[in-house]
Length: 178
Image 1 (tube, rainbow, N blue to C red):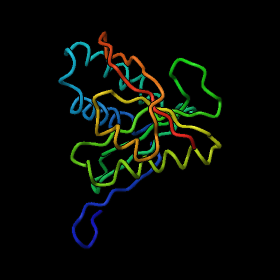
Image 2: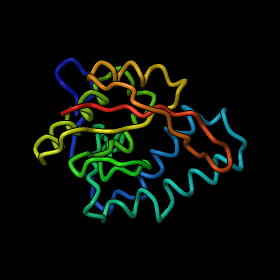
Image 3: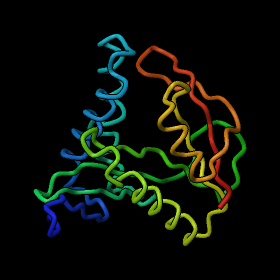
């Protein structure tokens, strides 16, 4: 899909269980491209298997508690996705809260509007479902992501230890009042 100027167009749709393998591969690549140098290979492999293996992201595509939206390029390849669902962080969260579990965009699509389109979708779906706040966590040194979420009005409300294999990461919990 390209417009008259030859710019690649992106289409958005709800993910389906058949997207599981491709979506998991895209997520693994995106995470590894962004954070892979921070971890021992065995910790990275353990995390990728847990998060994106058969019982992770692909299984969640059939779980009604989660909603996943994908961005696909002209060739039909998944270039980004957002996943929302129940808040998984420890603590006392209101029943009306929802978590943005992941918003990943393939590196070659950064700056192309995929991230904002997926974020807008997540917020719109949450509001339409009567949610009052959206919660997420972001790695403390992922400054690009921090700036992105802050533009949407997310504010830091706490810290979270995010485990990658056996390595603890320092994440920040952010909240957007919807």
